[in-house]
View 1 (cartoon, rainbow, N blue to C red):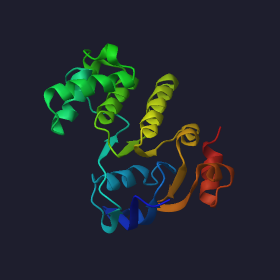
View 2: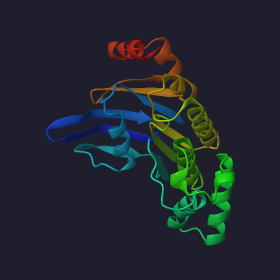
View 3: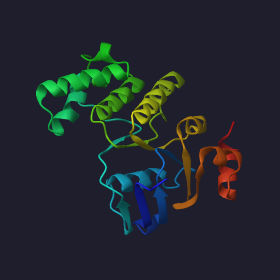
Length: 228
């Protein structure tokens, strides 16, 4: 499995605190989930990869340029309809008006929200807003989708629906890199687990190995604390 991204001694220091500490990592799986305790650096690592933060040192080496999109725990909704939120992203990418409309409608249908296309996006439930956010990126057909705790604030039914959508996006060929606190979700969605602890990569293993036989004491402790 060849790496689509190689991370070489990546670091980030803010206010004298080392948040990401000498991270080296090769990502080649289609579906990678980053796990770790609160404050371990999971979200920061994803933001560095997406280019939202600039590292203090180290390098990101892409095997080839990948079109990317990122969805956050609390998506930003424009003060307009669900459909217009999806259209907006397409317009920014230069699609023509008729193509924007077609793609946006198809994408909302794929996330099960075509019946709410004309509803103001900010009046939708949290789960529906997250599905609009996923429709917005799915319409762009990114080669890499980065997700930061996409179901953290959702009820179980909404979480299952968001998880289903993520699985379908992956099935259509998009690489998935995400964080989650839901270990069941990590089991279902991941091919591999990257475990980060105090800003350092503690292990990177196939998902079954991670849950059945974690390699480090930090991962063992994490699973004992988090597993019901």
